[in-house]
Length: 240
Image (cartoon, rainbow, N blue to C red; front, side):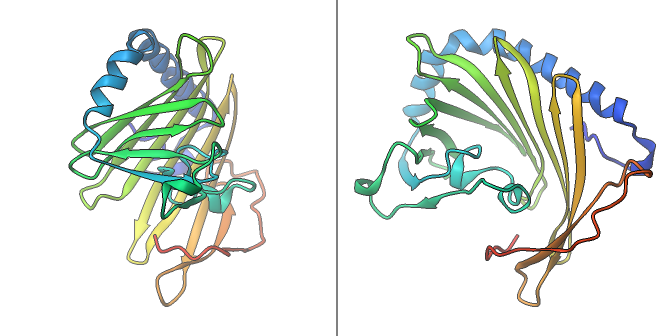
């Protein structure tokens, strides 16, 4: 596992972040060449291992909707919501997700018709990788790759999401999480797009019942950038 943020954060530079993201995009380009032609193989392999399904409404503006790997992305980024799980399939619509789980109750399949996307998710130890295909054309195209790393307690500690345009990966979202005794403590978030990078750290507070209550935004790398002095309050009821 190759963390971007480690040790003294001030030891890392913006160029370090750009180089990391560029190399990760190049790695995803290599994976794309290998997995793009394997849509039918992945579909068959994954769907035959589905033992139960769930459905959600809305959530198409965020990766995997209700089961977005990031536990706080919808908290710190505006205009994106998880959506909600449905009690019956009858209320399912195109802007929601169809989810498939294997016998170990792991999410292995996610489909959203509104964005013409099907994702297949594979697991190995404390790691998962998702291959997201655009199915709007006659030949499905691999346009998204995501990686998740977990600690021994099952908590996500690193989430990377890459997006492809014109057959080349050039956009990346990186989230690295730290935890304390209350729960999630810091989310280091990087947005990278074709050589342009932005980054901030979100520092969370919890209430006495263990739910997220608020967060501060800080730039822990660029000493010259003025931190956001405003405390942001969490309206969602979430324990993480």
